[in-house]
Length: 224
Ligand code: DC
Image (tube, rainbow, N blue to C red; front, side, top):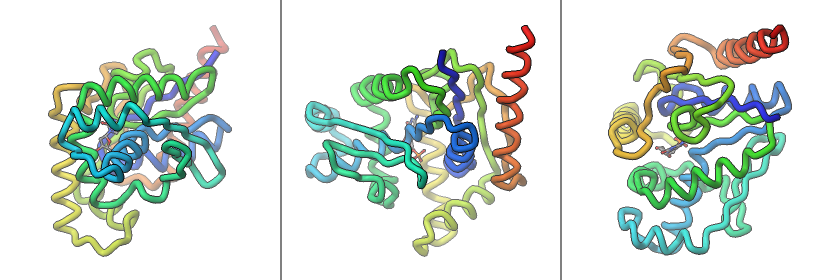
């Protein structure tokens, strides 16, 4: 039997780092679903296609083979055999991933892939629609958020590429808006997800909190 933990939340809420460390703690598979949308975006831009054009993106999907691998230093993502991991966090991809992740043809294909990658594994998956759409039966669902100012600070530290506070704040607000207001699989807290406000928590505190939730669940299940 496989055990699935779904972590959803806003950009900069700390879900990526937390999910990675929790997966490492248990020796489970870590799935960064944002990287799957970014990998497709990378390929669309590489092929010179329009990220707003559903037909053009559909063309790219015809020959799009995605593989993800867990290594000690995190998830590696491959497109058609090319390791694209280090090219996924550019400002260009931050912008172009928004229209691409709204497309029905894209979501159907990537959700299917995410489920197949997770088959027969204990997995910690993180994204925007994990608890609502990808794994509605997950054993544990967590929804993370943090205050905007704190998320801006974290984002700037993480990217370390000299973007100003204003630029990063504008980008986060833009992503919050699009992630939460798109028609398909918008970011929202599943009714059975536990909410965690990470504004004043260190990463270690977030990790310990999630580990504790998983252990509590395991204890109560083995007590039945
Ligand atoms: O988590 P991230 O910032 O790497 O995600 C990149 C984009 O992909 C994000 O702006 C919205 C989209 N995304 C999504 O629509 N559904 C997911 N499960 C994960 C990410």
